[in-house]
Image (cartoon, rainbow, N blue to C red; front, side):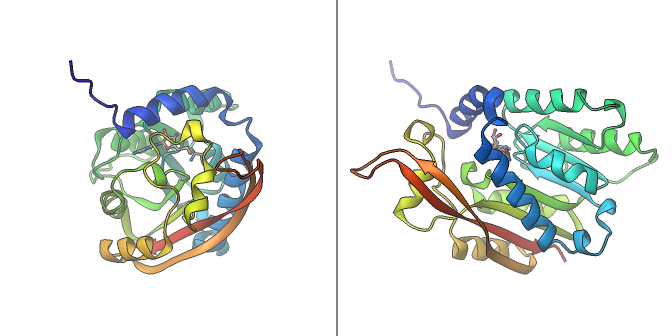
Length: 256
Ligand SMILES: C[S@@+](CC[C@H](N)C(=O)[O-])C[C@H]1O[C@@H](n2cnc3c(N)ncnc32)[C@H](O)[C@@H]1O
């Protein structure tokens, strides 16, 4: 009988469900998120001019919420989406541990976002809006900022996800997306060998990102080196286990 190979989505769900419980105890996960947070603050004007508390944020691939919980105190609301129940359970247990979870300005849902009017995203945005006392919202919810950290390299179609992000934004809204760079064949070492299944691409290419973001219709496009993460890689191909530097890109664009 023919066997059907699992899709990259299924492989990612299995992997991240397994990794969820220990995700936040990995110091390199925390360090990369802290560096991404600083890069977002440097690049998005609202964090520099004091207006970030007006921002409604959508995060693609929020995982356990490492970035979400750093951003939430600085913005009006944050809706996270992720495709792993395990990662979302970790996110939700952090929400439950807040002093008053019923007033939290962040929430996460299990969605493979493919359209801005997705019912789960709309439901989460509406719930957060009603918590802050908004009533009578008759338009679909849109966001001022879309963020995503270490997730684009797992997503099969980059043009499709950028088109969805564009639709999810209000006019004038921004994307600020961080992920590691494909700087050549050695970028593959970012993931240990047993974590490579389900990885769509071993890092992102600056020129490819610029082309896709431009083709999607964004303005104010910048794809720049944002920071470096130094981390241990395992011995492979005759090279010893050692610490190496992995450059990260931040991709910026604004919807007109
Ligand atoms: C490397 S983890 C990063 C998690 C989090 N951003 C962080 O930095 O801690 C990638 C996350 O993306 C999620 N993911 C993978 N493909 C996705 C997709 N198509 N849509 C939404 N989330 C996805 C995974 O479940 C996982 O939680």
